[in-house]
Image (cartoon, rainbow, N blue to C red):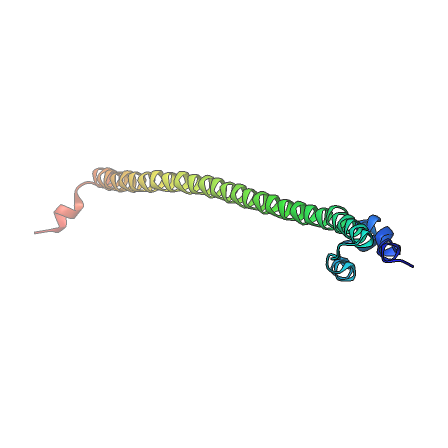
Length: 152
């Protein structure tokens, strides 16, 4: 088997199968197995160099690029999920703030009703006191002014 045949071994076919075969996990091992660029000035060395370059190209284009695209897509997805989470948190805070505002409005209305209620109680107490004085006066008129008669 010549150097050129060795370079076109089953590893080149495996690399061409792409990310389904390795999924990016064994790519470093494949790259190590491909090795360094062949050197030399012979026709076999030139052929081996072209095969090596094709293997490196295949590894980059069919394994590393898809892996990097998946990483990018995952990062983009994660960032968008974070943005959605932040928006959801903001909407939830706004909803809670609106609920607190509604509760606060209810408290203010209840407080206003309480002030009106207190005013009504005070007015009613004053009316009761006035009625008590009027009743006492009416009873005194009915009985006569006997209290003044008891006093010397």
